[in-house]
Image (cartoon, rainbow, N blue to C red; front, side):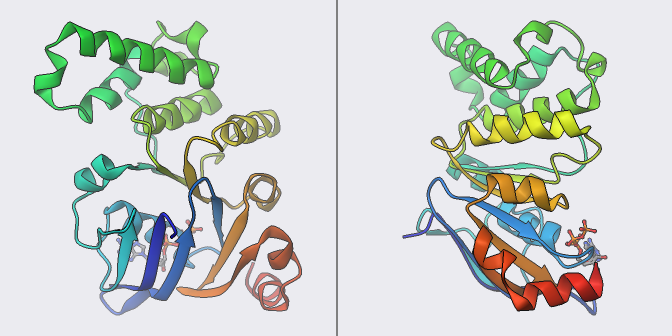
Length: 244
Ligand SMILES: Nc1ncnc2c1ncn2[C@@H]1O[C@H](COP(=O)(O)OP(=O)(O)OP(=O)(O)O)[C@@H](O)[C@H]1O
């Protein structure tokens, strides 16, 4: 049974069809990449899964539950976590406080008044900062981080609540070659902890971390399969030769 099942999802913005009957399945601990030309519907699909957009038609099931009409907060409680393309780090807060805030936002207020919970929160904040090589910067303001480190901080914030499925929209946008390489390492290290759906334009990067890929074009699924299936797909080659 897959962790995520997207069945026949269509999304219309007025007369524009951003998604046309898209199917997508993602298993436990699977890293799944969404690729395709600009405007093919990748971000819209991610937003429909996270609840930032509601599909016009179709269903989305997560951990055997129909979440098609659920609010983003309900989905987050069920174990879905999204990092958008646009940065959401609060630059005036410390690196530590950004992660703490992300964690607190997911915990009921009542649980935060117990010091035992606060202690647990501290451990979890330090744990994700360690994973993302940010412990030494924890007391600095987020504004002092490099662009790449701010992206890592955001992924750390999305991961703080230990989601079962992490959704990343172009996490390496604007990063240097070295930052991309390290991002790949940081993500691969999460493989035994969660599943991932990632949108990326850097095909080498996505090939290096994903188990399977789905290729979109003009709101349709062109092909879906393992990285080597997609590399040898004539349908995919045609899309990339004619549109990218
Ligand atoms: N909120 C919106 N209102 C109207 N049209 C939208 C909206 N969001 C996306 N679209 C349109 O839907 C189509 C798919 O957009 P989407 O951002 O999902 O594509 P994408 O594959 O992620 O593109 P890119 O690679 O350039 O980020 C595009 O034509 C886009 O202009």
